[in-house]
Image (cartoon, rainbow over the protein chains, first blue to last red):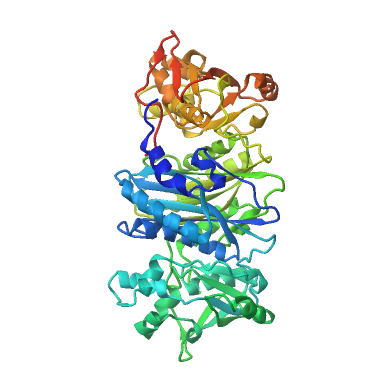
Length: 317
Length: 317
């Protein structure tokens, strides 16, 4: 029998070791999965394109981990637990094996950290830049996925972690800002999906912040038919973001790639939130409130005046 | 609130009408799906890149339908029924709305025909050519997905429909062959996924033929640890493929894009196959047999000599 094309050698060598039980050793065209009984499946798909979402020269292991993590973050924003993923890779034909090796090594690291495995996918060539697409599957107790809709006037606006680090990290990588700590660039390159928060216990609406806090909060407002006010002074910033100074505040509030949680929490649920998250390493912080009115996000500057933005967030198109 | 980026307008206008119940109106980051109780999920992901899998000038509705159909064909090859799909689109930034409109119209047509709906996805820009990725979900009764492994010596090799039309259709589109009937080009552009065959009732191993009959039969051989012999004269050819003449036979046996079923059928199951498929419009044809020996595909030419091929099938890489 003739030698198989390179595609099969790449799958065999670099991707089969990542395959979980549903993947049938990547030796079939499909994955077969018996869903855990009594759960809802949560699914999401996000793509990353070289030159748009990452730079062609970025380390392949970090590109792989970011691709997996931005999808894991979609699950985290619903309170779901990850199960597995499918991956399609369109790679320039001249791509060396070392790129695939490093890419797979990054996936292996994060598979271990987040308890997921590869279920299937597809590798092909492209005359263009790398174009990667990942579909993630997760599970949540029936009816317990926390959706974007559900925010109502009187609910608090909460976020996890710190906001704006990744947007400033991109500025650091582009040479517009310095950060001796390295935290900002690391937050841009390697987001931390906030899995493990029992969101259904205390959140009426939730999503992850991926395209900028102001723009994404606008999505919660539209889905709930409600307005929101943020106190800029209450938005948690990291030490390097604070050190960058107030000139960068607007960038923090509208820049993309935070991958933090954004929640609507009814007043009666704030105690449950505190109890449920006391032992978690990442804090949830109240940064504002939902108020009656047409869908709109108002940001109050630290000195009390309304802030305006040239654009509320990031668009990939 | 500022106007939302174009990405959101495209989703709202062209893709929301395609969304099924699990998609939450494409207004969330995720789809939430309660799997039908007592079923296995079957998942597959395939990508299509302009310049590799289709031509940039191809009609967008046909590109969309082919993308959906090649994934549906993966389900068909396991005997699974389609449920829904997630889609990521990386499009050149200059892409006009009309492209998305036609693309979505093609999906709408095939959603109706095949009973599936859009569950989620992602749209972004690319500095390169169109790069499309689709993840399909289907269901099958527990343990009844027919896998690639399972072929054994003595089983018959069966295929559905006719073989080689799409490969010749590409030759027609490239001006190397004429076909007044138009069938060959149509078979290249718009495959027919062979859904609805109750494969588990009679097939020990199955897959769809997407990369060339000889190469794909090699996959069944490797998965089963067995060899196979094909009688080239028994391989069903369409009237236009027969009219092309014997010089094109090798191309038919090794060209890609058939999207027909390829099955291993135990001798005792041939009656069940005949009974189960008698009322289906597409015939299954016995084209050879699995025989003892190391994984290998031998093709016997119509005049009785072994055929050899410069390459056994198609590679996308």
